[in-house]
Amino acid sequence: MSLIKKILVPFDFTEPAIAALDYALSFVGFDRPIQVNALYASTFPVSENDRKTTMENFAKVVTSLNRRTHLHPELIITEGDLVETVLTTRKNEKADLVIMGTLGDHSVEENVTNTSTLVLEADCPVITIPFGSETAIPKEIALVLGKEEIENPKVLSLLLDIARTFNAKVHVLTIYKESIYGENAVVETNEESLEYYLEHFYAEHNFEKNQDIEKGILEYIEEKNIDLLTILPRNHAQKTSPSEGRLTKLLTLHSSVPVLTLD
Image 1 (cartoon, one colour):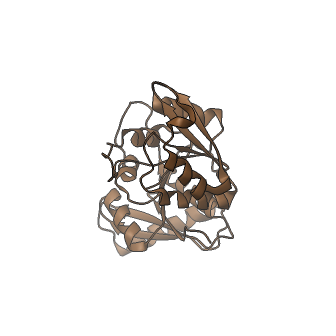
Image 2 (tube, one colour):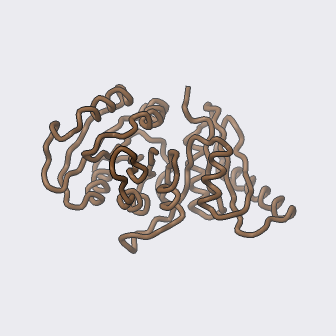
Image 3 (tube, rainbow, N blue to C red):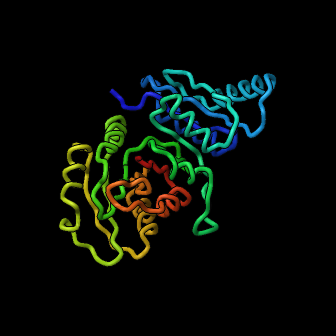
């Protein structure tokens, strides 16, 4: 039985939002009884007439995507700041996963977007969909790990759920700036967690050296034909010093494939 029962998709009728909705419906498929709720957050008061028009336009978008799902997608209309509204609605609706589209930003090294902000603030799994990426079910998944011990291995359960659903391989990647220590570099408990939580879908653990960790990850994605990148943000770490989430933000902005953050 799938761990995912409900998916929330922030939706503003832009092309990235439509692409994210398309991905969500493809991800759910026809046989899985998963509810997809799109969330339209207006910065202005919404009249009854506006609400009706928005609902009609959403129905047209869903029809145009031509995706058959077991449960019909629904639209939630609310008012307020996008990120705050998404986080609040996610809790109220008890959504298990947020799928959000992004244009990304390759023009600068770092930037703040609604998507990157949401990923860092969310305390739930989020998949970001870069606009222009193919809407493909994940078959080759890359999980990026550092040298630190996985603080909460249970978050890998959702990754296992996805791997089972799509019969996908999970390739674990660790990149070092200075040297590669091979198997000795891995925290032993990490290997135990990977083998336990990912079962036979855990394909391999690759170690690569690159002074630029982000570049190394993006090159690996292209080389291995990865179609879902998975990361474990450490900005909410409690056992160790939390990070600022810089790598998470950069990958959200620059990845050419969907990025799953497990939190």
